[in-house]
Image (tube, rainbow, N blue to C red; front, side, top):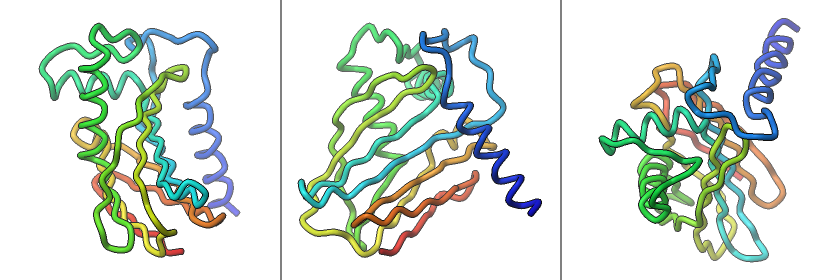
Length: 176
């Protein structure tokens, strides 16, 4: 029962972290006790497409990108949208690696958008058949935070499975 209560409190905290004011808060003013990303991976059987969305706190993401590119990165109001798209795309694709049935998947960047104090980035890949096995290597924000948690939800054929990775663990395996 204690484990259920702790899980409930943790999930409640995470849901509060990703809900916020209707208007965006400047990234520097955001304070939160956890470092969390959420990746949703869905196999769309109708379109024969793998759809991936990745949610990352804007302040953490900007800090990490600024450090990697040695210049200030502003994801709320980018000066050069094409350059920022490239930075977001490269960053996530290097740290969220997906294999379906043992084969690497080339993720195509669709774009990103802000939602309150977080950034959603979107990717897709053509996949001819529903995978039986999904392997993911997820090290998002690991270079910045040793308390990083990466949540992953994978859906194939109407079945949804989830996993949480705590730094430094980065490998997740799902079977359908």
